[in-house]
Length: 167
Image 1 (cartoon, rainbow, N blue to C red):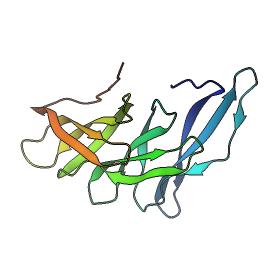
Image 2: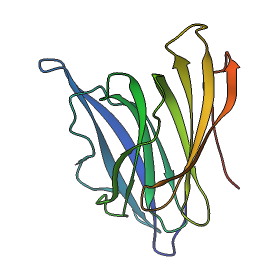
Image 3: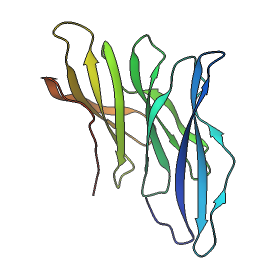
Image 4: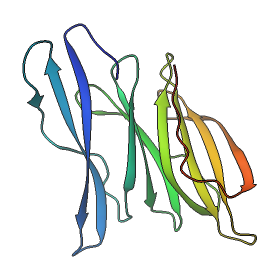
């Protein structure tokens, strides 16, 4: 978490389920902590409003205090990875962008942000054709939400649950 002089910004993620209409969406709750005061909670912010199943949310805060979010959702037929970037007040600065494009279920993403505000997202993907196996993939996203680079890191294996961190 990036520390600022006056406050620290944290995020708490809620996944809301509306079973009656089979819609899942992502809500975050910004938390601003003054240097010597107890936490003050902001209003809930709804990030997604899609007919899919948004889940497995990961958040990383960049050096500017802006959070980047990644999650998986079934919007395009298969579970895919999506990303978005917010400002310190929870306003969307880079709208929801699809990160993964392979035919297979992409899931369990993790995210980290570097000093240049680029987000690095890793995820595992279950291939939908024989031989069935999981692979680890990675993408680099700029602060505007554009995918700059992509590659399969551990293809043709049985790998799951990737994690990433940047020092």
